[in-house]
Length: 325
Image (cartoon, rainbow, N blue to C red; front, side, top):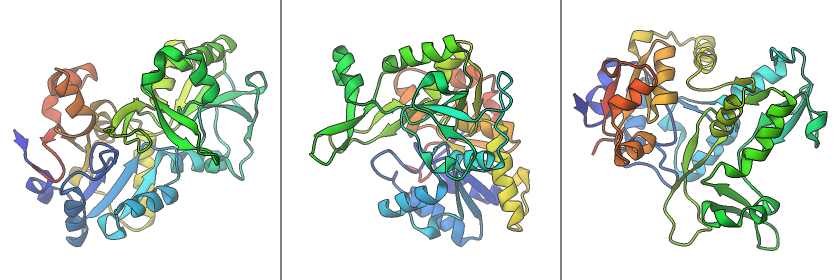
């Protein structure tokens, strides 16, 4: 059975964990009715937790979403994989099998560097000086754009410099990262990643008349490295570490978690749904928004998406969208 929206099943749960992109946020706006149902759950005394696979800190995400129209009364907590990364960096216990006591890191892409402030870990500018690589947001820059003229239509501008020239691009293609991932693999360096998402649907206001597009995100770079036999330490959904982190925060605030009455609402089987199953909570899949909607539009099925992740489709609840249609 496919339910119309979250309101149809909300009485079954006390704690709701929401993914952001593809669930309530479309990339350039909110899905219809999503904020309203989140607000209603809060008014009913439910615990509403947004858990984002973002390397940004939750405090920064709260400010960003507030500017877009997501108010404090729409949710109880906003926790990111970047928060978990910061916690682990501050503890100083980042360790790899190949490098138990790393200190120096090289960044692929653009870092959300706040997580590293005040920790013992030091960024270096040369790969050869690094103990490990940190996978930042895979933006590309002018020197890379010039090297790939055949991919010009795959590059979407996201930021202008002070002179009004584009200085930062999103990319629909992972090809620009083949060389650096080859170098990392050849050197045997391990990698640290705090956003397992392969893609994210983003709006690009600098592209006239454009629609939100699925662009490459950190998880794609991490998978490229894994395919090259690189050791990757990863935080965020679907891994158990982010759920343990969230549950500990709630516990410390005096909130009792009954996992039988806790759900994970997401749009991606590989991260959100598998993560919910890994955490032993009920997974709820949005099938007409986000990543799964795109997969279905391209001829895939929920059954096949689940089978690929060794998930019995009967384990999950399917809804059309958070707000319903």
